Length: 169
Ligand code: S3P
Image (cartoon, rainbow, N blue to C red; front, side, top):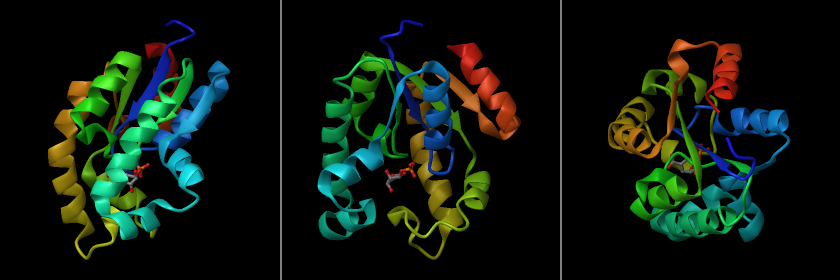
């Protein structure tokens, strides 16, 4: 792996893109960027407030702009949002600008991990299980198509995931 290549984590909400990304960046002595945090810093407001004001379409525009801005750098570890892969242009950009790592987590395990979450706008609904299932059906093929490396979190304990991450790079 070249020291200049960006490492880009993709996968569904609750997969641990931020947690694993921070850890990976520390191990490799790289700068870590979280795409949602970058958007919040630059807009001065929260992701849920952006959804409230501008809807999902407005958030997606900001997300694509932020992705292009962040991926102008080299050598970073980037944690994307669960829906960053929805845009074909975003997928092409990520593939062109780094090694893309897919953290896979099935919807049933997402549901458990996100049980206490009150801030993700897409989970503000009565049927969370149904919503996560529906998002997974749409997005899993996109994660698979976009990634260079796939890690199935449902089959590995945390320590093994990290060992595997380093081994793959
Ligand atoms: C989203 C996931 C969130 C955030 C926004 C939309 C999605 O990021 O970008 O709430 O569409 O799945 P995480 O995957 O970090 O939760």
